[in-house]
Length: 179
Length: 182
Image (tube, rainbow over all chains, first blue to last red; front, side, top):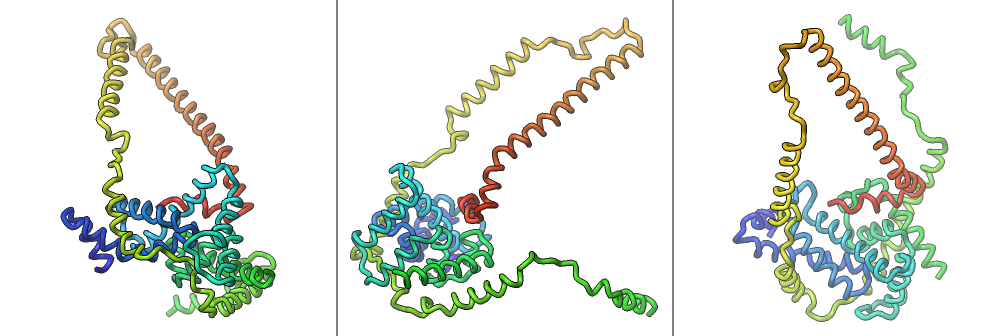
């Protein structure tokens, strides 16, 4: 089912449930992995992916189709994931650096992680980056998204995104070489 | 014909060949570095390292098969939130409060409507003078409103100035501030 068909079906109350299920089935894996790379832990990603789709469900009627459906969902997922980290920080009354330290510990001690040394090292390098650079790198490097799409998701210009990506690559290479 | 000659003559003006655009000092020195960095990043070993591109994260078996049902269940459990202004008690309370305010104003404000005033004993000049003084009062109030606006502008600048300074010092923050609109 194409995005357009999903959106049209969602407007018909009798097809709403069916259309939304199709949407979830279409996007759940991509969105889960996107969130997982931000929050690292599977349990957190599981919570955030559900929150994300609840938000999508509540707001789909007001989706103006000014952007693509998938970039809109990615944007919600990104916000939810970043908010999740901020909530975690507030709840535990710790600094954002401590949150990132926790995420780093989870990479080596957590469950549902099955990478070799170099893959884990790359994830650790990513946790050292500023939030925006980490996001851009994830979307470009792992998800292979176009800069135009990343620009829609992050609301940032393509030029700024390219600069962020290049900086991220430089820092990661330095990290991988020095560690 | 004459016009086109005139146009081409005008365009021959050497000053026109100088464009009005400028760049920051050192822009082109930095541009070289930026382009080289961009090329390096695009050609980076990272990009072609398929092993590194593999994410180390896994999910429990059958996770995605159950996820859509889980989301469906979560949506059904979600309490239907009604905005505050749409809740019945808030609407009733608003209507009651408005009625009380209107009734209070009706009974307490002095009845000075023009219809109730007997103008027979006043000369035309006196009435004109009175109306002009009333207008002067309205003008004064409008001037005060302008002052209030400028005071509010100062307060707004005070409150947002911190964010503007922070964004100028650290452009990364702009993303945080604008990110949560969708």
